[in-house]
Length: 423
Ligand SMILES: Cc1cc2nc3c(=O)[nH]c(=O)nc-3n(C[C@H](O)[C@H](O)[C@H](O)COP(=O)(O)OP(=O)(O)OC[C@H]3O[C@@H](n4cnc5c(N)ncnc54)[C@H](O)[C@@H]3O)c2cc1C
Image (tube, rainbow, N blue to C red; front, top):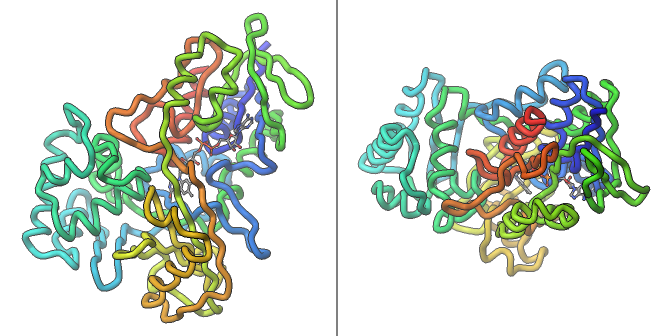
């Protein structure tokens, strides 16, 4: 009898569960934490619902949008804006509402903070990538790719390098050029709305995992919180899952835990020793988020602005999106000097950097949310395990599973959908 277990209630696991439930497959989700969402979840702070880190979705997140529409009837709580990258006083790229590829050409040629030579070089760079069909014969670093294509100065500093860090969460000197090209292909070089920025207007658990759980339950499935799976073993033609409450048999399993949790889970399955070894070999990169609450009425000129020359990289104004007046969220992606600072020192530094943008120096309170293993380090030619494993009926899902994308919501969702379809 078919009975599928999904281990892990992050975006990958919930995507798999929704796809299975839609097809009438009996599914049980096991989530170790008290809430769903994993690395994209709501977090309660000072009586407010924040996120473990503000996330940006793109128009190119086609599978994520498809599943959001499936589980959430009515308009999606996403603020959709044309791509607008602005570092006040230093750089501005705005893509106008023109058909592709005109929108990109006009955007690059009218970018501010770059001279004519640099604008043309940036446009030529995108043209060369298109001629290469965004494929490299041999993967290299993003730094090396930018140097090879003459991308120096402002375009590199204010556009390509921040995009690389934001998308791959890996510094350009270490990041995979091929994965970066995959992202550029589907966003900047995609259709006009593919590079639209989608800013959630609700927290990340409420955006997808919670309505996905309702969807699964309505179709007869089960979602168990605070229920870590301790071990998986073979049992006849299926699998036994051990939790603190005992052991249960399933015909199929989707393992949707982060890579660092996989080896322990697979320890009782010698056939998957190679998969466990690959997962254990991943290096990780951190993401820090500094929430700063300013007096009500404090507002940025845009919901999202770039920052340059200091530690902060992007600042999200949650007053624009979440009705959280005066609350700023500054993100710091990838490794760096900030990891050595204490939380108060980091918040004070970021507040100083933010002061010119908001005209206010001292926040009322701050909170640092640091995730040391936010994503896998997306380095050149990295080996990622396939979704299909050596064991029939046991598949992997997660942002680290083999695919075109770096560790992103879309990568996680696509892997979950693929896992369900495989089963
Ligand atoms: C701060 C931050 C900012 C980010 N910003 C962006 C962004 O702007 N845009 C973007 O697209 N992506 C962003 N990402 C990446 C994105 O959040 C992740 O790629 C995605 O959430 C990964 O989802 P997942 O389901 O693969 O893994 P996870 O979210 O890690 O989910 C795995 C789940 O498995 C559970 N689990 C683990 N072990 C067990 C067990 N033994 N039994 C049961 N359950 C278990 C965990 O509790 C977790 O809920 C960001 C990530 C972070 C951390």
